Length: 530
Image 1: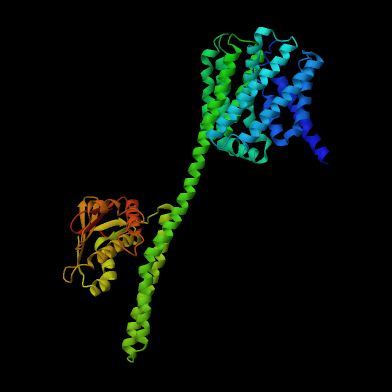
Image 2 (image 1 turned 90 degrees about the horizontal axis):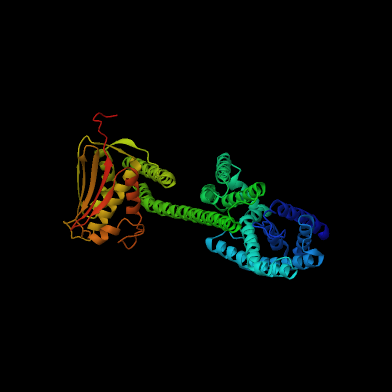
């Protein structure tokens, strides 16, 4: 069974290797296996990475068959065997270096891409130096042309591997195929974009090769346009598709038109630069997307934590009120006067229901706000809004001998989310109460001012007679978890500023001898009641 599986994978490899060799056998030097583009070593290196040393024999067979079927054994049987044996060993060493230094692939980061390109370039050039020396010993390469032949063969291998291996690497792996399909083909919009840059590549190839002979080099930069498009939109996967398509098209066109005036070395260098530019742009795009996804996940977790903390902060008051009313009900049940007791019980239970409804509404509105920043704007009367909040603080203000003054412009209407603005006002009043507690009796005062400051702007101020706020504290008060309270969470002001900003207003603290907080809201210019 293992032998059968090996055979099923070996035969397609040999066939694909020979097909690539035949398709790209153009501009050979002295009729040898020295061509400008050699993508078939990319397939062999990938086979080596997957199979290890077991890939040596199939690769050796593929090399021999290529020399026999495609080139007609120009070096003779003995030197052909020696050359193929060295190429198998040399490519195997490159494959071992890739497995050690690159591992799962060159697509993770720019550093991995550079490491992969360096291993390929150095390995292919060293391999070419020994291989061409063998051909020279066989009398097939002139003594003075060793450097030229070794450079051309090494660069041809390097360009072929750099351009072809990423796409073959993706296709050979199930997860890679799935991701490649998702990136360049599955969705209609993605298919349209892939077709767009491939069509642009065809147009640019026509523009380059349609020029008079010798002018191709002057317009080669046209080919960067589809490569940049694909890499910037689809990352490394798009870059792998476009550079492979461009290389195969260039090889086919040069095979069709024959050698051009532009030198082979120029085509090789430009092809390599085109591939590297595409892969570096694609790698940077993929890395940026990964960072963005990680940031989104982090922000979701932070928003969830902020929502939990905000709920704990805002629900503490209604839950405390529910407990107080519950204890009052227990106390009333112990009284003897049934008539008065029942009336008070009804009042206390009604307030418990109101507080529970308020807690549920706070949960719903905060959930909507954290989920999408949503605000349910409605026409709200300013004096009614302020009066409702002042009633909630009447008992604690009375207990601490705090004088509360409210000055609200009559018949003024706002566009606001009532529950969310009540939350803002509740935070400011609670902070003001805490700020004046340390003052001597008779000097504890809180003012609530609400007036129109512009035709379409309404300003609400909460001013206390506490110790005031200095400029440094005012600058950081609205940062999350910044608080001056020993038991505070530091989220009330941050959440309040976010709510006011979602309404199109602003919330700020005024530095001075007294504590002063102001926030603006959009005013409703209609004078009549809804």
